[in-house]
Amino acid sequence: MPRKNANFQTQADSREPLSRRSKTKFIIVTGGVLSSLGKGLTSAALGSLLKAKGLKVSMQKLDPYLNLDPGTMNPRQHGEVYVTDDGAETDLDLGHYERFLDTPMTRRSSYTAGRIYSQVLAKERRGDYLGGTVQVIPHVTDEVKAAILSMSDDNLDVVLIEVGGTVGDIESLPFLEAVRQLKRDLGRGNCLFIHLSYLPYLETSGEFKSKPTQHSVKELRSIGIQPDIIVCRGKLPSSAETKAKIALFCDVPIDAVFTAVDVKNIYELPIKLFQEGLEKKVSRLLNLGRQEPDISPWQGLVARQAKLTKKVTISMIGKYGELNDSYKSLKEALGHGGLPHDAEVKINYHNAEDVRPDNVAALLKGSKGILVPGGFGLRGVDGMVTAIAYARENMIPFLGICLGLQCAVIEFARNVAGLSKANSEEFKPNCRDNVIFRMVGWYDPNSGLRANRDPSDDLGGSMRLGSYPCRLTPNTKAYAAYDSDLIHERHRHRFEFNPKFLDLLVKKGLVISGQGPADPLENPALPRPKLVEIIELANHPWFLGCQFHPEFKSRPMRPHPLFKAFIEAALGHK
Ligand code: GLN
Image (cartoon, rainbow, N blue to C red; front, side, top):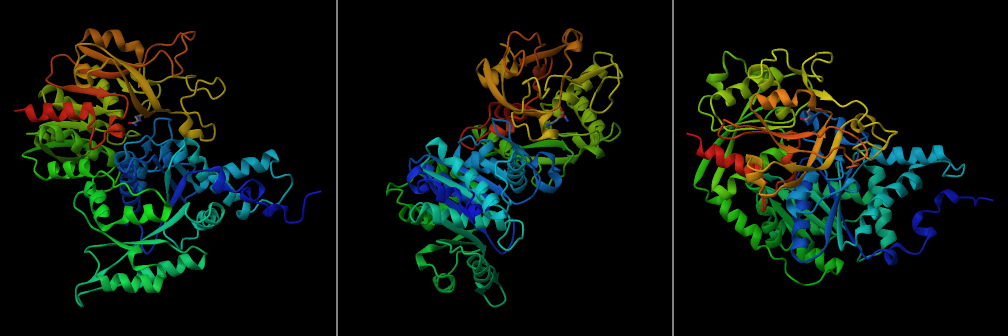
């Protein structure tokens, strides 16, 4: 007989105490007052400090929206979709995590409310709840806790959990309730709450205003969460008086109130937070040891960035707008690529829809390098092809990424190989000369040949996602850049170079400098054509297209070889 209230036997009650099962400590970061306060960056910077102490650190993002993952969301609205090695399509904050921690994130590092609910509903359909009434508490909250605790499987010392959204939102309530319970389950000393809030400075009266922080902490406390640390984001370092006021009203010690001042360069953040003493406080509360983090690599990086002597401008022909976060990793990677050459990289953004044969010369004249990034759909493709023709004919260094490679192949087929109707199946489904096509049957969900191993996401499941090996051809620009013959890069696309046109295009001068495995699972029993992963042009100073997204693997301390080589070529362009 099921017990009355059996529903409320939570995971924590039913087994041995969680604190004994896991040695991993959890830091939960919530945000208040406004969105876009830089919760992801602050969390990542704190994570990097803990890693620099010698700890094993990872991170997780909990997003309150109902999409299963951000894969189907428009980058103009939500920013870039960041792809992990294991093929998860995630929030762009994971890019910050990887760049700051230089540790690969996984599918487990990103959960949306939609994914949590879909797991709960799948269990309900399977009868896992034994006829019980399925409720937010405890079923949804248990699923959230299980997702968080799954992070401890990797023998980590610390995991930072960033709860997306702003305290007070209806959507984030189940997540907040779950982390409230988690602290109770894990016990003091194993779990810690940091609340990031906003501290406005009123110029007119010349004072900081702590009221918004007081209100957001009050909101948090009304759902049972008492923050251990409050970090105030503001233009200026707050005064001792303001800190004391916040401490009093929010019921935390004065030395648990910190400010995160606006920085011009995001890589200054670890240094600033270290100087504020945030890592020391966290370490004391979680018993993480007294060793000081080595922040010299960050200091070195920031010092180098501050005195770059050269400048180079790259023209980027994109379709998702310039100001928002749609090309976050790409902008970062271009910046990293300039560092080894002592060069600051500026991006001159052009909307692809504005580029036409009659104005391309005027728009791109004087460009030192031209970049065409990834994208989906026909909009803007003509402008991209036009810009690529200009780069090819005028010997301007060119880097094409994913859709950028596909457009470069189309341009070459049309204008060099004489296939005037060359196209991609994405834009013209039944065209005979589709040099870019979709491999039917390749990603059949039933055959086990899917690139995406999560059977739950249908649209995303039809893409080649995540890390794949690629063999480089000696004596090519790609080989020279990587200085290796086997690389692994991350993919996110449905369409591929059509091998039917390989011989013709190669005969006309296209160089295939990187090829993928015969099939995603490297199963030699399956006769599959090899996938073209990188193309180049023989008679051009530097013209390269890659089917993967190198920007996801670039790190400030380890610039990606292709961006490094591209910027070098751009600097050399007269
Ligand atoms: N739209 C293209 C495809 O699906 C390219 C995708 C991309 O650039 N990420 O293959």
